[in-house]
Length: 371
Image 1 (tube, one colour):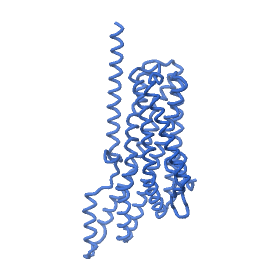
Image 2 (cartoon, one colour):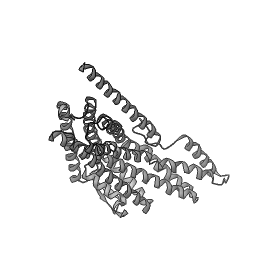
Image 3 (tube, helix red, strand yellow):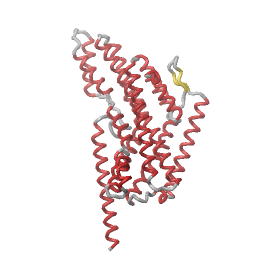
Image 4 (tube, one colour):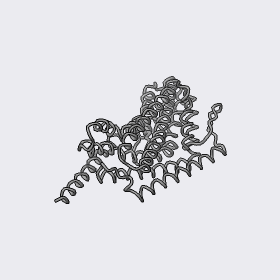
């Protein structure tokens, strides 16, 4: 089963199908080839997505009342339309970036696929498969939540269809990019494990050279290519995260659903944003690159000193290693690691409190107007 994910083939096919990375994979030479047909497909798909997202954004901006859910309050409806329009903007931005920088992305992925072949391991293929299964399961959960939630919202056919299509497609594209980024990080971590093993066996020059090449790619191309993509993605998920709990507080807990629907809506609103958050946590918690990079210093510290120039090289490396950590960032704005998780959850809780305050102000205003 894990062979289907060897060389990330299934990921590449899905990315090609969704118009994100349109190229042909030459398995024999481990090359990603851009053909005239794939270039036309990439341009046509990016143009279609830009047109579709612009049309959805414009329609939602000009006709916001059509997207209002009758059972929801004014604050919640404004928040929902804000999320919808932001999702359209992020999708168009992602396709624009992926198309304009498609050659850089292709060269980066090709380099990492070759690294994966040099450090080939069946356990990594299983990791890729497990990541893909998780992505598939969460996509089904996401579809179920959106279908159950919006089908009971009382919306007209057009806004209901737009909500469903945009959100489910956004999850498919954005979370595929997240899980693909996780796989690339796992390949780099496996490469560091491979070269740390060489250092452990005494092959210092080859091990250090390979390690530095990986970290150069990590802090260079990987940061530039995927860091720019992660910035709007994390921002969008941060904006979306309070929507489920806020809907729960504003409708279910206020008794706006009957006894038959209350339990099902409680479950739906409680897990509304869980698929997005699980994928985000997976991306931020996959931190093998830093762990393995720090192990190198421990291995070199145990190397017996010989009184030659090799000792000076090791000491110089250890001093440099203490100052330079391989940190992946969202284009320099924040680190893409576990340290960001606490900040994100703090921000989500803060946004939740602000939304509840606006809701209470709205309820107070309605009560005053009655009298």
